[in-house]
Length: 165
Image (cartoon, rainbow, N blue to C red; front, side):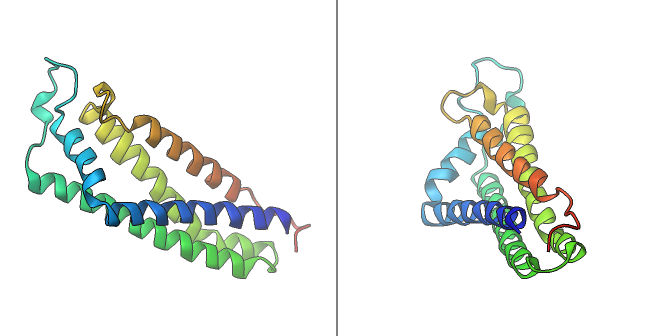
C-alpha cells in the first residue's frame, strides 16, 4: 500500500504543478506570451545564423502557439487529476485493478513528456534555435520538467506485485 500511495502522491504532485502552470499562464498571460513570442521571432539568437528564415513574426501565429500550449497543459492537467482519482479509488483493489487504473495517468504523463520534448526541446530548442538565446532559453527548464515527469512515469509504471492488497 505504501508504494501505491507513493505513486498516487507523485502523480498528484505533477497535477499540482500543471494546475499552477495553467494558473500562471492564465492570470499572467503576457509574461509567458513574451517568451513564446521571442522564441518564435528568434530575435535573440546568435547574430548572422542561417536559420533566421524559420522565424515567425506574426502576432496571430505566436498567440496561436501560446494558446495551443495552454490548451495542451489544460488537457494534461485534467487527465492527471482524473488519473489521481482513478488511482485513489483503486488503492484497495487487487493488483490487476490497480494496474488498470494506471491507463489515464499513463496518457497524461505521456502528453506531458511530449509537450516538453516536442514543443519546447525539439521545436523551440532546435527548430527556433532557442538554445542560442541567453534571454529566452527555456531548454534547461523543459529538460528539468521532462526529467521529473519521466521519473514519475517510470515509477508509476512499475508493475504491481501480488503481495500488495
